[in-house]
Length: 207
Image (cartoon, rainbow, N blue to C red):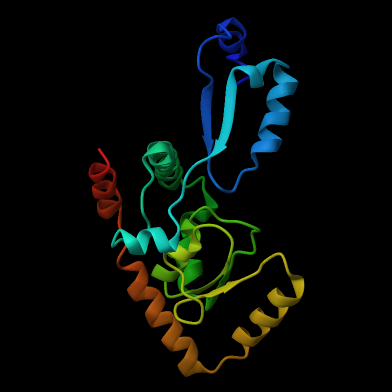
């Protein structure tokens, strides 16, 4: 995007305020800045890169809020991207060109879903797994704490530690039927609180 539109920033008068780019917390401003310099060395005299604000648990508690709290500066972009992906997925499902059209069937026939990413901004796939009665193993870095509670409806672990991953997954595999059933029921109940309609309402509330 910046390569294609670099002329805009080249012609932008230096005396004008910098254009602020807000990043989700999974990105690294320094890396983005380094790439911007490669496109046009003077970019950083006209562009400012910052992490998008995300309310902490203490801040949400103080405001009487729980769960996922939309941030106006990034929510519109995230939701726009989500709907574009969703529409593309629906088209491919209709044309039978997307193998993950059977993803929900695979999840419903599985007990455990592994997401060993270093970071997840929200981790929608983990929530989708919960809705299918599949226990997700999720990274503790990022936004999975909006819905995932360790040893209640999921396992939330340090995915950067190979030892912790192996130990946690091994214990879960060896867990008895009753405990797995408890985790699955809690996962399904948690996922039931999320829907496209609620997401739409949350957008309306910030405008």
